[in-house]
Image (tube, rainbow, N blue to C red; front, side, top):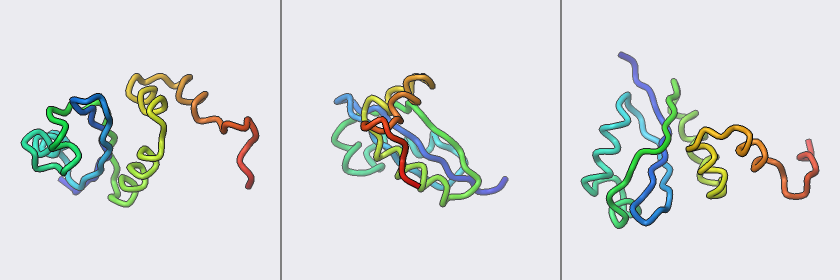
Length: 103
């Protein structure tokens, strides 16, 4: 089996979200690391965590790019993604000014 990468989002015990990416083909191994306190300082202080979203990529660079994009999203937009609410996600993606992005 080839090497894959994934981006994932965890809901922490305090209600906050943690977004990460990892190389490999088993997201649950990475989540288990977070649950045992080996995932990083942020999640270690907010255990337990729950996996609420993940997506797979053939290239690690694509997973890292997706992670960076998700980290920049508002809480409302992250929650719409977790719910699978495409209409809310689209509405929340509009620019605040209502004007299209300059090209």
